[in-house]
Every structure is written in structure tokens, then in C-alpha cells.
Image (cartoon, rainbow, N blue to C red; front, side, top):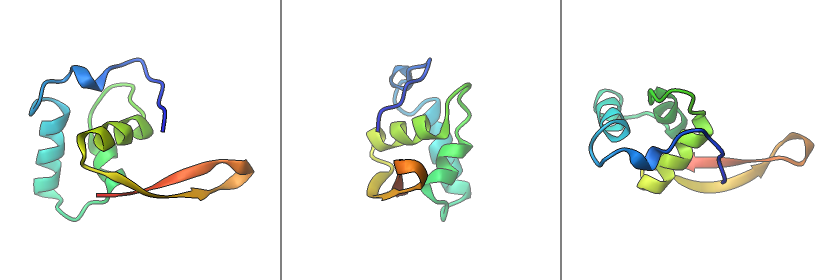
Length: 80
């Protein structure tokens, strides 16, 4: 999935910023799904799909399937 966004998640150092938010969120909500985790990340102007892409690069989530939705578009199904 390609995401165009005016920010760079890769600039965050390990175990700071977003990764800390993910760890804190999972400690409080261990049964959360991937979209809930992505939506919980506080990063200005970042869409959920861009956050999901970042989580995929971290290895937190993975794409398990792609389904067709309206008008020939597709949507990824994610899993932790």
C-alpha cells in the first residue's frame, strides 16, 4: 500500500514517540485490533492508513487479505 503524507514516521527513534504510544496502548488494551491501535496513535495530520503502513513496517501488523469494495477499489484486511 502506498501512502502519501506530509510527514516521516521513520524519523522517530526506536522506543520513542509512536512506538512508545503503541506499547502503552497495548498494555492497557491487549485485545485491540489493528485499526484501533492505528487510530490510537497521536500523530498530527496522519491518516489511519498511513499509520497502518508504519505499523506494517514495524512488524506489528500484517496484511492477511485484500477484498474488493465499491467502484473497483480494494481494501486490505489487517491482523496483528
